Length: 257
Ligand code: SAH
Image 1 (cartoon, rainbow, N blue to C red):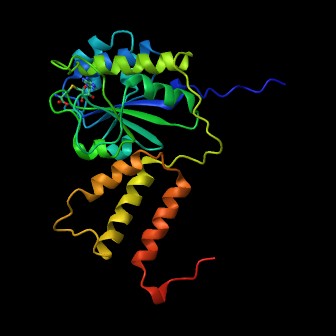
Image 2 (image 1 turned 90 degrees about the vertical axis):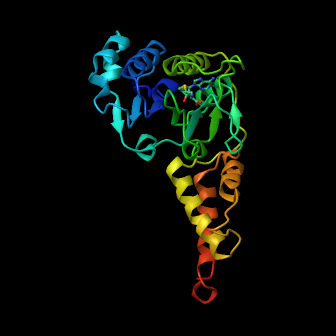
Image 3 (image 1 turned 90 degrees about the horizontal axis):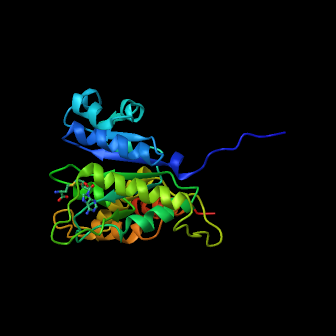
């Protein structure tokens, strides 16, 4: 009997997220860029025009990609945009002191394509302001397109095109890498990791390691440290367990089996 084959290719596991896009034309052009490379999932976080996908310029620039454009999900927060994702990449022309590891589009495309367990989001910023630091810090990696150092800021939809192309090429065989290094557990979701950081922060305040009125760069540094590790759900649970233990007075602690 023929069992239907589940399509677990990168085309079904990758979502393009545009944050606070100003120009409906760019949204349309991004839809086209995505579709030409075989992708279909577009999410808009707080676009300047809430009805951007029905704007004339968006429709014109989308050309034959009306289905991707009209199917775009419009949401109010990053949390909603990243729902069910366990890997998020911020795409930014700007490098920052506290960011997750910086990688090239090609390297990240190879990583996403070769790991069928990843449900990934590529997160693009606003045309003028790019992405805020808090959003970048929520991501596992920061993708920088190594452009002309004297003029490195691409048009938003063209940056989408570069990423979509690299991901397609990675899926079709080029640049595939074998990322299986023995046993790997379930990758932790972005929301799970955020929850863990809140918990950890609370515990660090409780033991007065973190001073709320002079936090320095402790949390951004810890986020950067963990962003390098590809946390698994089990590991997130261990770290939360440690935070819980710190926050529970000794006499109330249950003995650990
Ligand atoms: N002036 C903004 C750039 C906005 S360009 C800034 O300083 O960040 C709009 C978006 O396109 C960016 O947020 C980013 O997602 C993407 N982009 C443009 N050029 C890029 C590059 N060289 N590398 C990575 N992303 C780029």
